[in-house]
Image (cartoon, rainbow, N blue to C red; front, side, top):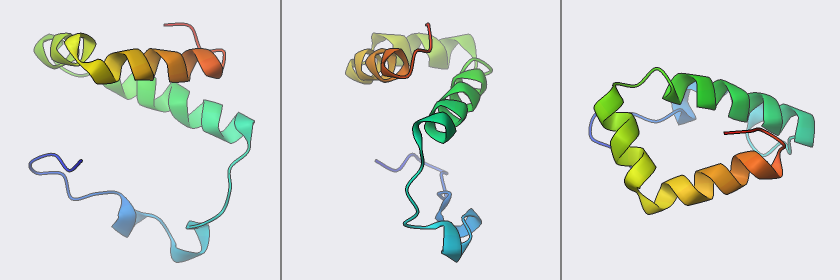
Length: 69
């Protein structure tokens, strides 16, 4: 799903990194960073996300990596 104005991270990821599998520790680190970034969104955006179906999946994903929400 592409958001309006979102250009994607693809151009920022070095070619040699694409396709590499990440371990649990690396995934957890990225999820913690993303959670911190999401927390910096405007309250309205956070509220909309919290009401979405994606939020439940997001919480389950964090829980599966032992990240409390």
